[in-house]
Image (cartoon, rainbow, N blue to C red; front, top):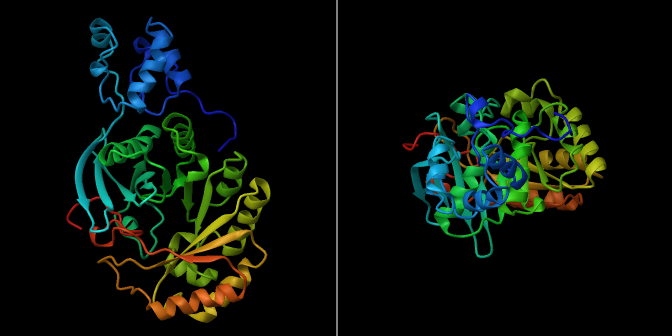
Length: 356
């Protein structure tokens, strides 16, 4: 990954393009350049941008401010919107969507409402190659990375369905974001500049890919970085996250410290609590020793069950005991009870079939 600007996907006129790139994710400047390539006046770019991001248009044929003749000329240019394949609503108002992409693949996204915000949990890959033992997504294997427009589309879909402005986006759905860095960074830029969501309201989650956290830091974004740690030592981490074997926890945390030094941004460490596996007070003490002096926050997440494995959620007393040890060691900590549990929309439950 490089800190240099990403190439525009809309550089060629239609006559020279064999596979037309979707327009969703493009900036005002990119769309303006594109419409001018088609012989249209520059102001059409701003109109096109407004119809894509604020009116939710799904076909250029539906943009009534454009002439019928030009609409017919560009009718085959895709905007890049998905269709809702399946939708389920949990009692707490959380909505899980299975979205069908242009090639027929299915990806999951979740809308999480509260009194003052609407958060969208977006996917960055179809499936996931990281194979975390407690996670449903990894059980289904990996198919491909999502493109920029496919990530931005998830946010617009939830926003349209809720008829409410999305305030926060977490890259915590299906997939490992830092294995799809270019598209994730492009989506961050578009969500910030085109959809209008502040960078500080965006969170990128990663299990930890060697050198990618350091490279992300070089972009000096104001997003929150969340690192899925889930264990206080390498042996246990490898048991829970087999893909962590080549990347020792000491190296991962050293890279995280570099991230803090470069960006000045605090890191959030995600820690799924598994009863009898990683939730003991002595493990909390070991974790606190690793994080001592670190500008960070520990986000404890009681396990959300899936059918493939028999892990259990710790009791509330066990969770409180873990929290107590971290607080005694002056580690900032909070407990996040996931929303959408009974709709299989909670953390670690995302998968691409509606029967689960």
